[in-house]
Image 1 (cartoon, rainbow, N blue to C red):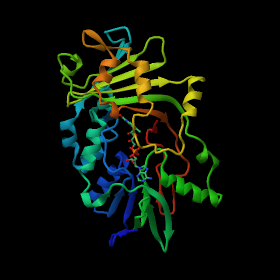
Image 2: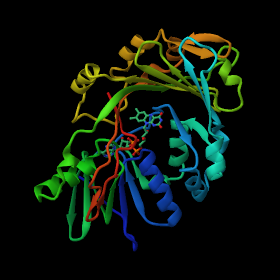
Image 3: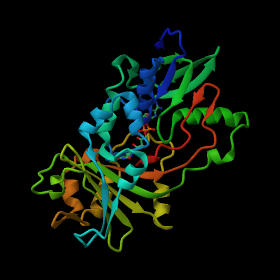
Length: 341
Ligand SMILES: Cc1cc2nc3c(=O)[nH]c(=O)nc-3n(C[C@H](O)[C@H](O)[C@H](O)COP(=O)(O)OP(=O)(O)OC[C@H]3O[C@@H](n4cnc5c(N)ncnc54)[C@H](O)[C@@H]3O)c2cc1C
């Protein structure tokens, strides 16, 4: 068993999780010269997910971090969304985002999630991030926080921040403590509500002669309402000639029961493997998608996406009443709350 203690004069922040939240906090602390360490359970980062739309809420932060230009260089301007019925090449409606730019002074951009994740990861010096450290327990001892990983390593710091996803272990440990002291509102123990499951992925780089929307210099963002079925598809082109995509299944009172049975409360929610994803690909691959002046199918998109990077997630969302106590901080809401199945 090893103990990692970093001698610092300033308080040391231990961040659990190297997702977008943990890395963003790390990058900010790096900039502010506040000592921190990031503890991440996975050994190797995998390029999961689809696309991130980044505009007025986040661009000022990217400017402060000094990464806005680097981000814009790997992103595409995303000025509008085309909304289609499944059987129509022409959009039923085009929603223009320029009004947000007029209001805020910031354009909208899109980039694939792995590109954004990598940009943030590059801001963290290698000696401040520890992979393969799955945090199990947290305790306070002599005004120090002791965090223990599954491999037996312990880390000592002054503040613990749980940036470890929807089913945060940091939140769970915090809640166990508060519940034992009768200090936890009962709403915080209720299940996370959800109404959709969602399949997400990103294709390999594609030939613009075949996938015509890639010829456009701006991000081509289309939303397709599937005919007579409770599905919505979104496609977004990237600066790397890939198409990021997601397929939402809107659940009704029957299908929500099936999804409820598949809720693995104690599973590794951030292991974004392909479990159950391939079945949903099979159910949806015949859906038509407009591609310039012709139709393609979702199957054409799936066949060009590495199957081990397709994930099926539940869109679970909740704002918690309790998000900190003492020296432990969890997130206030689930982070757009997607739980991989
Ligand atoms: C499969 C999937 C695909 C997504 N795709 C998109 C998308 O395309 N577009 C979009 O806008 N949003 C997407 N999201 C949602 C978006 O990624 C989240 O809103 C965002 O990632 C939240 O960031 P986070 O850092 O709070 O949590 P997460 O990204 O979930 O990161 C949590 C991190 O903590 C680590 N961790 C968990 N438990 C422990 C532990 N006990 N000890 C140490 N480390 C731990 C995890 O391995 C993970 O790296 C996706 C989410 C999922 C699950």
